[in-house]
Image (cartoon, rainbow, N blue to C red):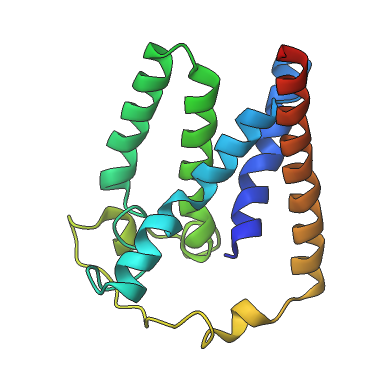
Length: 172
């Protein structure tokens, strides 16, 4: 899944749940942290695999529930301790929504199964080729769905930035 897809898969339900539960939209800062969470596994795993050859594929280390669960617990604990639970919740929600986004063909459908990469290192992992950024044709082409997702993600990110800037001006 492309970055904007990961963001939208998490942002849309997060915004709806926040609106229903609290009768307001999430703050720009919360949406920004949610966005970081949605990209976190790829920010760590892709360079480790594709650039540094430390792991054998770009969906292994941070894409594993073995690491995602304790990291999520730590983030929730630290955010609550620092009196910022909404930020911790946003990060963890984005992070955990990333995983089924990458493995959706395995976890949704008639023949569902738990991919080995999601439980690495308990089980072996599948080798995935290591594309260079320019050599990856899917990164250079956009479907109409991709364009629509980019526009919606751009509007949401724009709202988050505008909200952050407005909050800072009001605080001054």
